[in-house]
Length: 64
Image 1 (cartoon, rainbow, N blue to C red):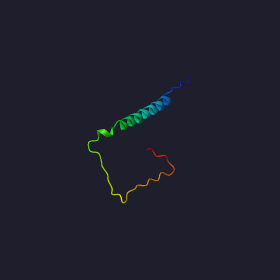
Image 2 (cartoon, rainbow, N blue to C red):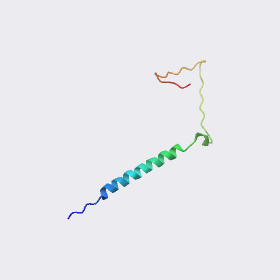
Image 3 (cartoon, one colour):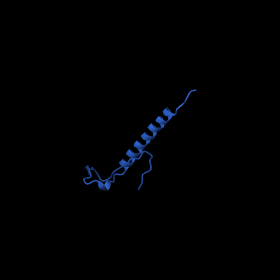
Image 4 (cartoon, rainbow, N blue to C red):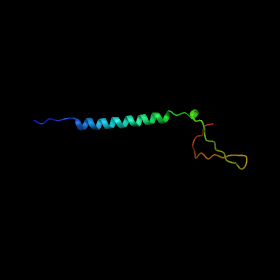
């Protein structure tokens, strides 16, 4: 009589579940940061020549 076990199937499910948990935890911890928590935010500036700025949106909608 042959006895079958589901060890391979359980192992594959365990690995898949562990991978999903790792991805979920990494995603949630990265999204938890707030811009207000930054004590030293970076500021950038550049000199503009002229009085107008033209934005080419390539047929994309721009929010006001």
